[in-house]
Image (cartoon, rainbow over all chains, first blue to last red; front, side, top):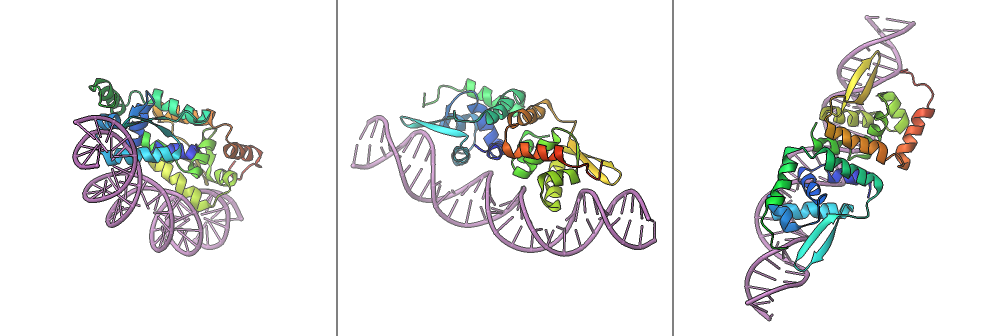
Length: 110
Length: 110
DNA sequence: TCGGAATATTCCTGTTGACGTATACTCCTA
DNA sequence: TAGGAGTATACGTCAACAGGAATATTCCGA
């Protein structure tokens, strides 16, 4: 994945929130939607964007698509992602998303 | 500086190269131009963009403008920049810029 | 104070991307 | 096999931004 492409992925608030959650664990689209409380089409398009850039990949399980940070990323890209995970842990919006994810009742996809 | 704004700054190849150089030391516009070998107007506009976002600041010395990474950045932003400095050290284009900078004959502004 | 070097801004054009609405696709299950 | 849940795509619109050409600004030294 290109360095510049990574930063394009991170340069939109919604995508940044998605990445923040996926850095913890792979998630189903419906879980992401619920945690971020954004319209389905918006989520789907941002996820599609990051998939096209090579940042995410999918695993289909029954009726659900689980997305995760691609395991094929270079050291350099992983370093930037790690900076996000650690450095932005105190960001109010991002932390709130994580909480909402933890406190959510078991989603249908589980 | 906003997290998202930082990544917008880093999501253009020219800006990424500029930041890569400024992470080493403050530089005059003419030095940046010479190292990157890009037209003056292009450099100026990208530098202006990053200044507006709060990533860079200027120090005027005689006839020259020296730019540097702003000293007022948050821990989170600094963490991402550090990831660039270390993680992307092996990137061919970025390393080449650094070499060109070192091997350059003393610029007029020094 | 005038010319020139260093740098920024304005104008124009083409491209990319963000968002919403509507619609399509893909499976699972009844 | 029909309906519905989960998810993606197409289309239209608007804003942001990249690049080049031309021009403006600022400040130095002669």
